[in-house]
Amino acid sequence: MSQRLLIAPDKFKGCLSAPAVASAIEAGVRKVIADAQISRMAISDGGEGFSQLLGEQLGMKRQRVRCHDAMGRVVEATYFHGDGVAVMEMAEAAGMWRISNGDVDPLNASTFGVGEMIGDAAKLPGITKIVIGLGGSATNDGGMGMAAALGANFLDKAGHVLEPTPAGICGRLAEVDLGRMKELPE
Image 1 (cartoon, rainbow, N blue to C red):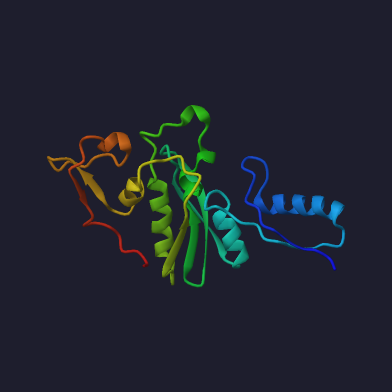
Image 2: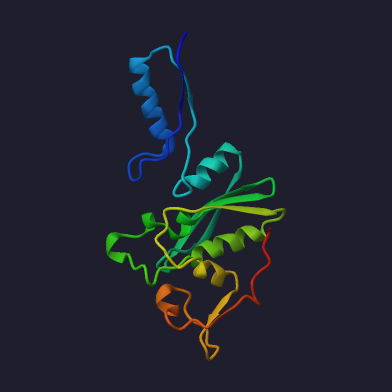
């Protein structure tokens, strides 16, 4: 009786995609157990590669959108959609993979681009649900940038709008105004 094995790896960050890791592991196993019944299923922790894995496995369409990375630079990000669902990952807009070591600035990094991606997906006809993989982020703004991109304002005691970053609100935040938030799918 041959052995049944499931190979279900995540990516090897900076080296191989999850499908490539699964193929490499299978090749190694086959050298030891030639008659093994092997199933491969690439997985993701929600970081880089999450939306591509899920989007491709579900046969979704690829969507490209211009948005901002964690440091405010304009980039092109990708997400997937189909059957009323959009699938994206935070890392596509605000990921560490987009930032060189010298550019890392956690006090000024923002999730604004993630909000731009959400806003873009919400405009697609028929989208009723948005799924976001969380991981691989270069930010720690708690989603303030994302909320700002969707219309939220972060205010000081005098009612002035603050920059939605840790540095922008630190010791100054008095109110969060959600009155202009865009309506999104539930």
